[in-house]
Amino acid sequence: MWVALAFISAFLLGCYDVNKKMSLNGNAVIPVLFLNTLISSLIFVPVIILSYGTNVLDGTMLHLPYASLEQHIAVFIKAVIVLSSWLFGYFAVKNLPLTITGPIKATQPVMTLQGALLIFGERLNLYQWVGVILSVISFFLLSSSGKKEGIRFSHNKWIWFMILSALSGALSGLYDKHLMRSLDVMTVQVWFNVYQCFIMVCILLFLWYPQRGKSTPFQWRWNILFISVFLVLADWIYFYALSFPGSMISIVSMIRRSNVLVTFAAGALFFHEKNVKNKALDLLLVLTGMIFLYLGTK
Image (cartoon, rainbow, N blue to C red; front, side, top):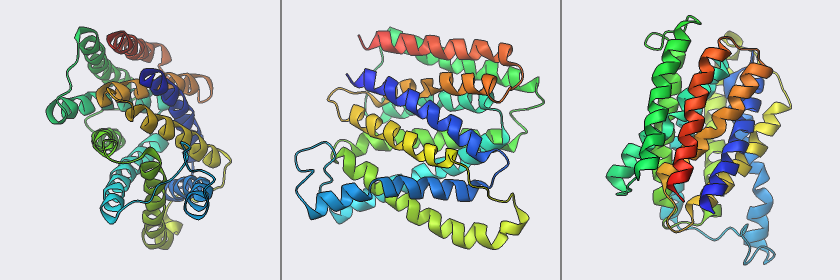
C-alpha cells in the first residue's frame, strides 16, 4: 500500500513542479515562495479550527492532535530544512530548464539512501540496488547533455543551487522518517507549513522588500495557487505512506523522484526545451530504476 501511495505522491509532485516553473518564469522568486507557504497554511486553517474548537474531526485522518513544546520545536526544525531546500530549488528552477533540474532532483533519494543505511539500518535487496545504480548513472549522463546547452555543471551556480536543494531535501527525508516514528501525520504537515509561512514573512519583509526595485518584479499568476494545492496533496500522501509499518524512506524517496516523468514531458511539450532526445536516455534510466525499486518491494 505504501508503495502505491508513493507513486501517487510522485505524480502530484510532478504537477507541482510544472506549475512552479510556470510561476517562476520571469517572476520574483521570494514573493512566489511566500505565497506558496501562505496558501498552504490557509488550506489547513479549517483543520486547526475544527480540531481544536469542535469534535467534528475526532477519529478521522484529518484530526490535528495537541502537540507538546518539544514536538513543535521538532517540526520547526523540519520547516527550516525544507524551506532551505525550496529556496535553493526555486532559484534553480527559475534559471534552468526543467529537463535539467528534474533529473538532478531525481538523484536526491541516492543521498537519502546513504543516510538511511547509516542511521536507520535499512537494507536493500538486489532489485533495489539496481534501481539506485541506474539513477546514479543517469546523473552523469545528464551532465554530458547539459554541456551541449552551454551548461557546465561545475561552473554554473544554478546547478549548485539545485544540488544543494537535493542535499537539503535528502536531509529532510531522513528527518521525516524520524518524525513519523513519534508524531502524527497531521501534526507534521500542518505545523511545518505554518512555521514556513512565518519564516517567509520575515524573509519577504526584511530581505526582499527593501531590495525589490533591484530584482525581477513580481507578477501574480494562477499557477501560484496550484503550486500549493498540488504540494499539500502530495505531501499528505507522502507522510501517510511513511506512517505504514515497514515503509522504507529510501524507497519512498526514490519513487517520489519519478515525478521527473511529469516535469520532463512538460519541459518538452510546454516549454520547448532543447536536446530532449539526448535527455530521453536519462529519463529512461530513471524510469527503469523506478521499476526495479517497485519489483524489490514485491
